[in-house]
Length: 184
Image 1 (cartoon, one colour):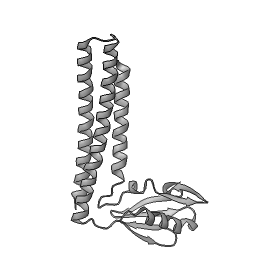
Image 2 (cartoon, rainbow, N blue to C red):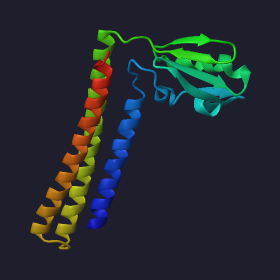
Image 3 (cartoon, rainbow, N blue to C red):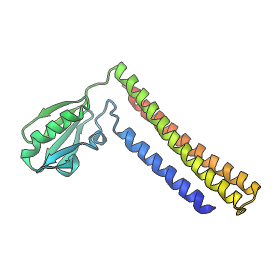
Image 4 (cartoon, rainbow, N blue to C red):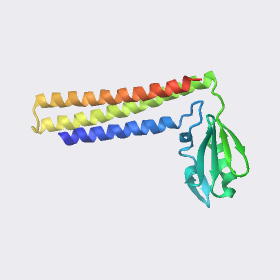
């Protein structure tokens, strides 16, 4: 039975980690290198993550400097960033690309908050699905007489506590991101 709980907890932790990664790609009014995750640049005919072809650094609160190791990559990096449609302005300095994050408008902030809520709901559904799968495994054990009905009730209550804890964590992370978005 402990294996079932350990598996459930592991899956829920992976969901939380994926949620954090998803939220990191939503830009706030400040520069954040995480928004560049998932952007690939064509490097000698094959797509490469941008952080593997250039050094990325924060210059100031609203600017990221991307300096490729190969100067010929500047145009390719600029093109990849334009295609990513991040809502940022780009400045090609010849040997690097500066990514400037404009101030978010009130309307954009509200749209991003809605997006955060939508994403958090999707991840909460994933957590609940893990709970459902775990409860089905527990009921199957009870049917096979590997555990008593009282043990099943206790196990389901334990799984519910784990689910509640993880859903609260998603809510807390989402609330923190919403605060970041609404802070001017």
